[in-house]
Length: 200
Ligand code: GAR
Image (cartoon, rainbow, N blue to C red; front, side, top):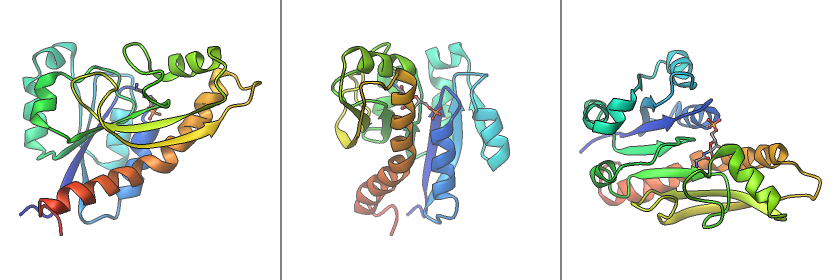
């Protein structure tokens, strides 16, 4: 039996969610942040990896296309669960099959609305604003083969005022992400990995 559940965090941007997750699990003996992966040289992956002494892999377009280098790296790091924290690439079927029900994504809106291709970051908040929504929020879900449509683990709403612009909506949503994402991950790990006896 493994004593730890190893997490890999995938990011494309600044990585503020990744930092929250790393801080949250810092002293946890059963949950370990094994590595960071990113498709983007300009992302926070290198800085965060160096700051927290977590191995990181900034992969190329070709690495992602052929997948083998990604799979090999995850295997080397004994990764059990993948966390998509602002990762903007579509997860290929091969990776979903390697990690069935073991990839968690956070989306900055209340799915099933405002999901799908092109719906990320600022675009989501602008669409919410354009539609004159009075609420937005976060969705944390398992990744399935259909973009933004896997089983939902958690949602939380926030209120939007008429005067809020897309940036302010984004700020409110990001606050929810930072507040709830790590706890939802921990709850899922206890449910999924305890059941299989992977952790006690
Ligand atoms: C977060 O708001 C996350 O929900 C969003 O990217 C941002 C990343 O911020 N993800 C998507 O839009 C995925 N469709 P961060 O790099 O500071 O954590």
